[in-house]
Figure 1 (cartoon, rainbow, N blue to C red):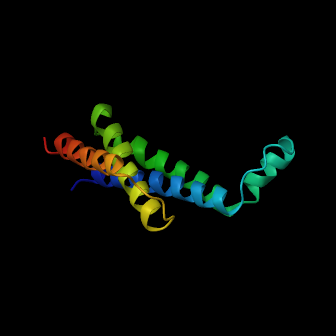
Figure 2 (cartoon, rainbow, N blue to C red):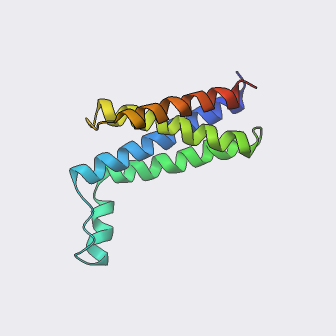
Length: 121
């Protein structure tokens, strides 16, 4: 495994982590948009999970741009988004207790097959 593959893996993990932190943050303390712009901004700044999500997005961006030096965009982007989708979905089901129906589960397995076809080459 080369360093650029590790960059892509880290980008995927941090991107998924960012989305997970964002969800956890708004579940714990919803963003207050109806009380004005200052309250809206402060509800973000005072929520450590939302701020962690923002930091994770920044870290993911750094790793992803490094991965793009080696990988074709047509491969890297589908891998990042689909692998992230799988991580986020598993976390959502196992930790947030969200449910998937049969059609969604089938779609998830199709995505896994698509990832395999992209990377098997």
